[in-house]
Image (tube, rainbow, N blue to C red; front, top):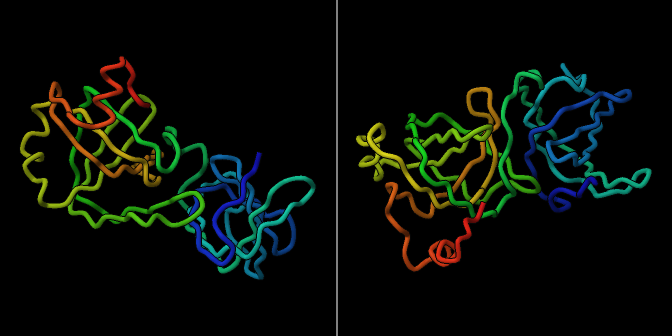
Length: 210
């Protein structure tokens, strides 16, 4: 069921498909099947429901239309990402979820500008970073922003596996794949234990938060 996004008067960003459903009327559907509406006098290209956009706009109102919750937008910008079928992978979890990734290999890349998306509102956590750690795990891609103070990890990137403790803060498109943006609480070499945290308590009970 569609949920309202953001606060009226606030700004949101969302990755979504866009359909032109009438003259100057656009229906926007995001990855979680939330429905947004936008009226524009401009003709927006590729709004055929087959392309993926980064949609950024101001929340004009929250309305119920034919029993569905709609977020009505104004002042929208549409950035074309790619055809929908070309975007691979899945997003992981919800904003604010704490996760633990164990026994993983990572790669480090120089940081390019990352397009941030947070369902509802722009993330208040947008770390400026010189590097980003990229984690591939099954159909999921994770990105952790890292600044230059973490260069010690760069020299060891091909030697070790890591355990990562983090929080989901947003989503992005990374090399044609849906990527989940994380704010790290700790990154440890495999075998090390993050003592004194709720993760250690969960592990003692045989539970891993995912």
